Image 1 (cartoon, helix red, strand yellow):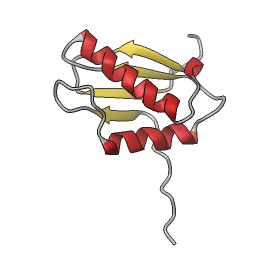
Image 2: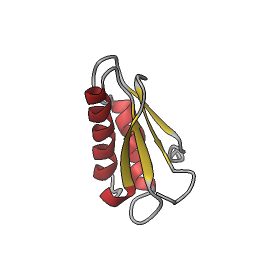
Image 3: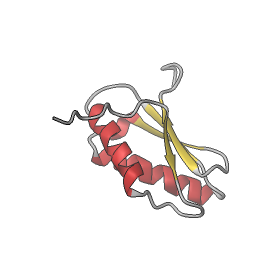
Image 4: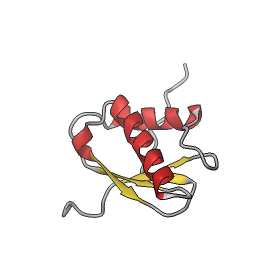
Length: 99
């Protein structure tokens, strides 16, 4: 019998195609597996959006957040922040809970 693979670990890196905020199926599956493994109460996650413009970076981060919400992570656990001009969105736990 096939065993389910372990959920992805943090930091979770979601790669985007150039100049798009569309999340491909593989990346969506990764977000879904992670979200299901951490649904309910738990630590907060920072979603660091990257893109060639601030608007693209923010849209990418919002779409990653929406995928995690859809998988059962509560809204109050998600914090979006702006990243650089990279083609990735990174989900990670803050170093401390001072935020």
